[in-house]
Image 1 (cartoon, rainbow, N blue to C red):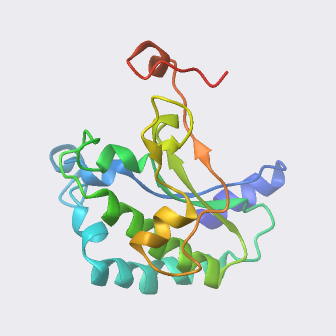
Image 2 (image 1 turned 90 degrees about the vertical axis):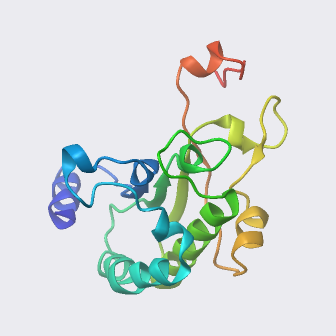
Length: 177
């Protein structure tokens, strides 16, 4: 219950950044968690399905919570790169352009209907840097997102990059610290 989360967080002076989706939505968790657990590449690939989600779930939710003072930002998707073809490890995968379009569609809807910031929880510096080798590029720049979804509202307000110790020990070879 999101209302309860915000109320409890407010009591303790905590800012909240809800994460709407995760790369796990592309894995098959149906055996353990039921028929709707995962395998949702179609939500990313099919713009009509994405728009239905936006119209019927996302917009009402972000409008409802738009005035919530301890709502810091909306994270559209956690570590989307793990669900991208050629990079990913999930059971289903989508193209990078499809993922960027999905992010752009949701970002635009949030920007239009709520004054809160939007971000993506990038899985690593490898996909969120154009200048630090062996990075492959910054997949979440305004230009990259808007190339996949042409709208001035399709952008993230800040970069959020995840880092794990194992990233230094593999062939990625860098440590942000």
